[in-house]
Amino acid sequence: MEPQAQSDPAVGHVTHRVVVLALAGLLPFELGIPHRIFGRAKDPAGRPLYEILTCGLAPGPVPTDADFAIHVEHGPDLLATADTVVVPASYELGPVHEHGRLTAELAGALAHIRPGTRLVSICTGGYVLAAAGYLDGRRATTHWASADHFQRMFPAVRVDPDVLYTDDGDVLTSAGVAAGIDLCLHIVRRDHGAAVANEVARRTVVPPHRDGGQAQFIERPVPQPQLASTAAARAWVLDRLHEPLRLSDLARQEAVSVRTFTRRFREESGVSPGQWILGQRVERARRLLERTELPMEQVAREAGFGTAQSLRKHVQAALGVSPTAYRRTFREAGAVPGPTSLPHSDGPSVDARPAH
Image (cartoon, rainbow, N blue to C red; front, side):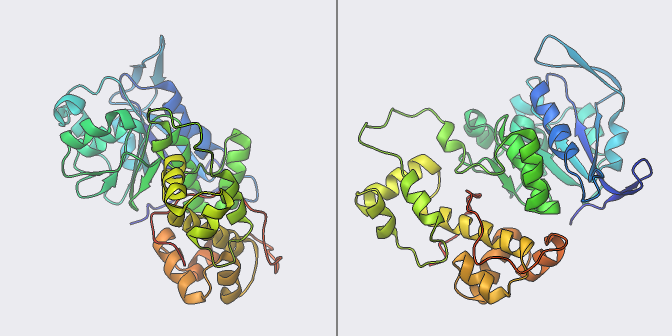
């Protein structure tokens, strides 16, 4: 269930309220991520699309992992007004981290959250959601260094230690620290489209997307010197998304065998070549749907899906809506029939089969 927007008298239009739960021992950097990303999201008239507020288990000072505390104006009753609740990481989770159970005070705070509220965690903030049972049976992630402990503590959660974030509809989790930026940008993109998210990313001076997942940040033995980057093959693909692509074609760009190329690609990007190509095609389709009025058959051809039926299948799987519904919601105002191709940029990896 998608959260319900609220009318904010201060700005005179409908906004979405994000409430950030500040817990003792929190990381100031992660606390600031929702305020920075959601706070920069504007509609075409320049009005804020989100209202961001912070609460604690009680009003007053909240200690951080730095040499200063923050002063929080609101107590936990503010959670009852939230459309989205964000739980950043904390280094003082106590029983939540050690035994997988909520304290009475934290359980009482979370009880204010209305059914249907979207729940988001950053880094080890996922321990709070898991201890409350929100992640049971769901795919989730956390900082790679905590992933094994997280899985042992919460066996009912399907922990994916390799991704930057997970999206299970009304519950989303991110990996460590800066991955919270990736997740918040993803939420803005999901709520308001790529154009708004890209503008937020530009103002924040961060990339709109990051390829791969946490795998690229986990310490591993240094690869052999002859293992060169697969960047040339990826650049080659981005110029040919509308064409049928074979793994052997990509391997040929790097002058290696298919087996060697596949291993290198996964080591560098965290996903298979097929998954990466599918992600790029979905992103190309999104931009065409948002920025042009091209017929669905042509969008499908330009994005490399071949047919409108294949386009529908993969867009529905990746975005949770049909291409028609996505265009109706997110197409930029005043879009006109566009060129047969758009500038290329790396997009998110999608855990799905290749389109061809």
